[in-house]
Image (cartoon, helix red, strand yellow):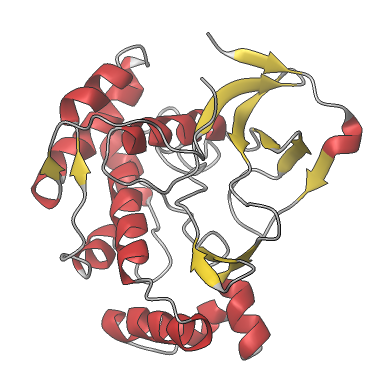
Length: 265
């Protein structure tokens, strides 16, 4: 059953980076509440959470589909601890070099040069090796048709002791939720053809295949059970890519306790 939350206006936060995603947000009692903006973003965040729940990826933000002040959306627990701050790769680049990271990587022709540049500059200024982080993000983006993976939702976390990887987060543009772009009258094939992936290439496969060594296990039976109550159209969309890219993921039953960043169900 979808819960309803009524959040006072004083908790509204206007946050946006020019992406396709949700901007109508509230922050209260250490939870973020995000209203849908251009489609069914909250549903998409929830569906990707179901995928991640049935994976061996442990570090991700968990989203609950809900109603916020009468508007569909989602809720997620703040994944930052006291004293921590989220620094997007776009902001990190601007702070260290100035300018726009997207423009910088577009100056490189080869995909490998683009990816290696970003990993090198992050490592130089934070000491982090984000190879596995990027591999996980880009493979899940490919699986979920996430067309909005720009450098403002790839991030690291500054802690009191240094830096650490951010969890996987922000999947509001997955599963063709942007209904002003992917209209109801379009077939799945037409929607796939219209996709414009980011941030390193216009091809999900090219980005993901660069990280072939980053392994992800999925519980395919668990995912199928988790989406059984969704519409037939959404089930078709989800299952199509699960089958299409099965060669890139390990099929393994996942049994675990949901970790600390997961929200109450």
